[in-house]
Image (cartoon, rainbow, N blue to C red; front, side, top):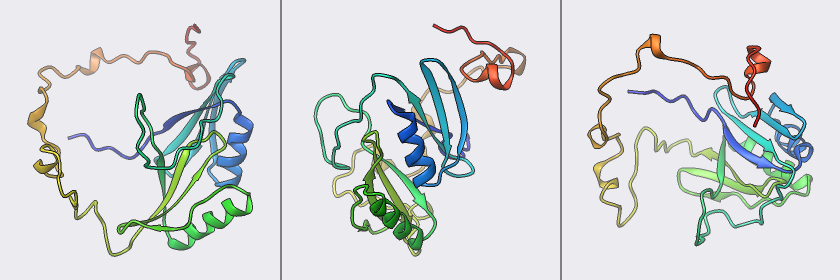
Length: 197
């Protein structure tokens, strides 16, 4: 079975990379670990943890999204509500709340969700963000809870992956057939040029 090691990166978009750097690197403290680009294109990566990053494409015609309350239902085409970043301690959660308030960034009160305590805010691009700290005595990863009073049929199958629900791989790609194609960044790290469109 595949063992995932976290979110390699979330890819967001911005029209103002400088404001994005000021918020994510300088206010939140996430290191700027990679910056790819050429005139008209930037893709910058910020370190969340040893295994996780958030990245931003800078596109000139992007405008900040209108703020939408986290978790509030919408209708029509929609793909993203908010992202939550974990912090280790309650003190760090309060420290973040104080930093956001001091920077005149709107931030919610600390909300108790039972298994996590959270604060909510928006980045300069209008991206809804949450910061969460696990409640010490409750770990839903080790002891999953289905508290939905009317769970879907698939949810009733339990927390473990149901391997028999998708076709099996009959022919794994042999090592000698595996090929990596150059993408953005390969020219900087490997000297391999990708054709620009």
